[in-house]
Length: 481
Ligand code: UDX
Ligand code: ADP
Image 1 (spheres, rainbow, N blue to C red):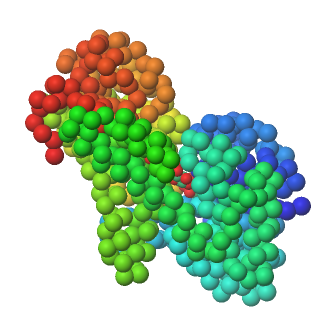
Image 2: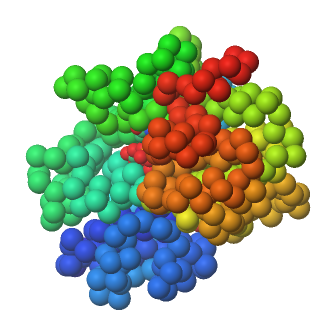
Image 3: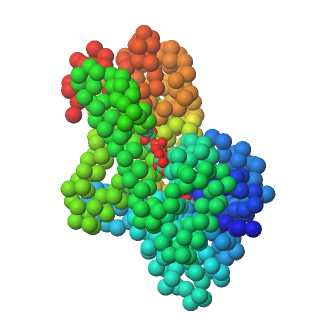
């Protein structure tokens, strides 16, 4: 029986291993983590991450061929294949930082694997990492190997998106496996391929060399982020000209060479991957003497930052140029719907912008806890990449931000509402009731284009939707930066 061990029970490791266990009953899968709270949560009825369909998959295999454990060394030493999905290195952040990614978690994972292994291992790099991480891991493993063990390193990047992880894993567009082009390398690639072949058609399993696999993942995320930045740049132009970004995106997306996906204008993209991966690309470009190409990718991030500040500026200028002392309800904090994940969510920058202008904000998100929100708002920009249990709680809780457990509570007495995540429930709210309980004039700023602006205008709201024709009210307000 093939035994798989996965290091890291996070957003990538947890769902991926659950689906492998479900689809491969003959394989034993053990997910291990240094966090005892995470592992206990995976072993309980309250899983540590929210992902539609995940509960069901875990229920079917847990205790059968899927296990969650903190006994890392035991399971690593028994496994044939070790997936590494520990925290992705994120320290390249900051434009032009010119710094290599911090591989702390990866390095300690690799050293531990070398220490405890007694038999041959295939080590699979799973979460997105900078190009050449596989090579670094390979060096650590081979230089700490005096037991004659054969370590094969594979890159098998994950393409699942949060909120649709289970569907993405069940029906992936493709599975990518990169390995060394040696006989041992090819054998390792074939073994991993045979695992996926349990449910993925063979022609969708692509095998490449190690670096192509690593770079393909960064490139795919950078291209997706670039599309959102492009449509967001068009949204600003729509507001200036009277075009409707939804109509423009629909028309553009009808071109079969372009396609309709990832063309929804928004307050900005977020999530743990896009910004980090683009910064990794920038770093690689700079290291390889390609500053012009680095500048090209920097622009994608700059437009994303611009979109967030444009939103805040639009809000403030519409509300008589000040939000000081005003209550602003924030609906949605996660970086997208159907996840409780807040990593790099545009809501952090928007809320900080509003708090900086002395607004009182009242936040509601169906899946994000109050603790998480307070921690995100109290934290310096790039601190979140440390797992929660390693993070010091900031003493400076953000006083002007409160968190409510209901959209109606959050909007009660508010001067304005902003929608920052496209949760389905925000489409179905009773906006007449919300309007009744707000200060007048009542404003709605829709950063995800989830509400019907015409219906809300009929109720009496002043509405701003990204990239849509502006209300007369907004047109009369001073131009935004
Ligand atoms: C992404 C990739 O899609 C996935 O393949 C990769 O493995 C990990 O990174 P994820 O970060 O989970 O997945 O979410 P994704 O659905 O890609 O959305 C990223 C951000 O873009 C979100 O903030 C989302 O709201 C935003 N977005 C997405 C838009 O603003 N407009 C769109 O049209 C699509
Ligand atoms: P991702 O979104 O990439 O899955 P997460 O932060 O959700 O990232 O998950 C990474 C997990 O890896 C965390 O639960 C963390 O505790 C765990 N982890 C970090 N280092 C190690 C290690 N050396 N061994 C096992 N687990 C680790």
